[in-house]
Length: 160
Image (cartoon, rainbow, N blue to C red; front, top):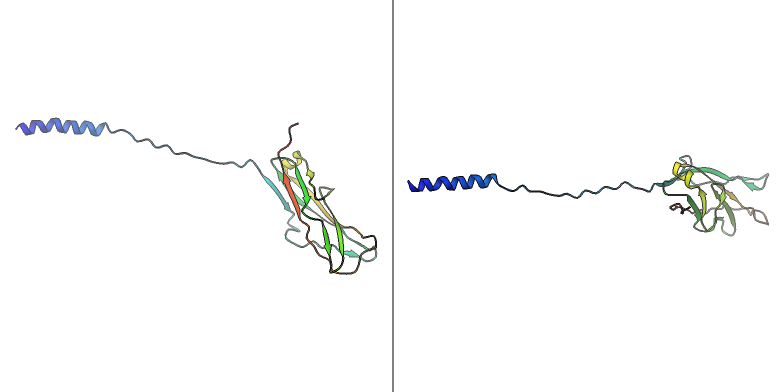
């Protein structure tokens, strides 16, 4: 009978221990990023991924300039553009220099602002034109081709 009386306190101890189990806490680190920079310069769909053709007008001895537009936006600041290399088209023996304008500004190898900070934040159309520069001796017959490489950049507005 003594064993039965000893079992009762033991069972009471085990039952009270089961009720006193400590809760378990787990901390989960959560991270999320909302991009602060939106920067895009995309050609109008009418000429995206298509070669640009400069048509020659025999009667005027001149090329018809190409013109179209980019859609540009930057939530960071103004947009600048520059040529990556001299803009030329060439045949086997001749070259023709090109005047490339973006935002109505002729591009060179150094950056020039082509869209203001305010316009870039809204997102606007950015005109582009490519025109052949007539050599002093006139154009020489031939088939000309080349690549115009433009680098667009955006930067935070400077402190005013």
